[in-house]
Length: 229
Image 1 (cartoon, rainbow, N blue to C red):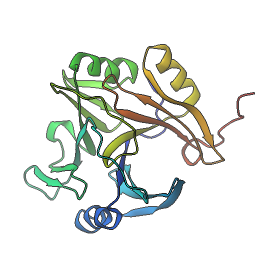
Image 2 (cartoon, rainbow, N blue to C red; image 1 turned 90 degrees about the vertical axis):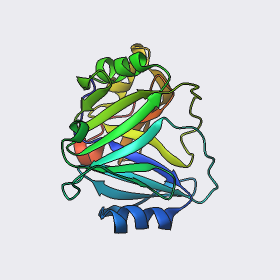
Image 3 (cartoon, rainbow, N blue to C red; image 1 turned 180 degrees about the horizontal axis):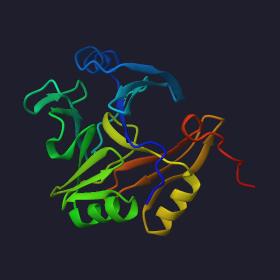
């Protein structure tokens, strides 16, 4: 299992509708800002607090495509709603506010689709070490993942496309976890790389091709250690 540096998985969106997205998540849903990062390529990443996770709104200056993604819905536990309430953000992302405990969600949850439920279950439970809650639901840290099969599946394209595009798992040692997952047969999205003194990251893809970032942030784990020789 991955060695988590924090329990909440982070949620990554890409958009050409930055102001509208910030109005939805910040003003309407009340998520507080944690600042803005310039991540290159004309992208500003707005970081919002999300029940112990971070919602990363990557506002792109370049026009984005609308490639397929398996990330279908973000669930947010909200003690103010009596029943599940489904909203849609400006990018077409489904956001469901749920009473705490709904489908096991006490912080956030994610609904993800792919062509093979058994392969998705193996990925989350065996490769990443999530705790099974049901045949199709798994808890990794404080985040609940619900896997759903979809017929006529089309593999997701580039990560930088409009909508809900990736999850970030904060770990203590990116290189160790990345190598172990690749050895298990998990698809590599991008090899580990260092971002100065801030973080070391890599990317993997689940059995359906959905993107997942592994991140080792200095603010969570301290010294990133030496680079490879």
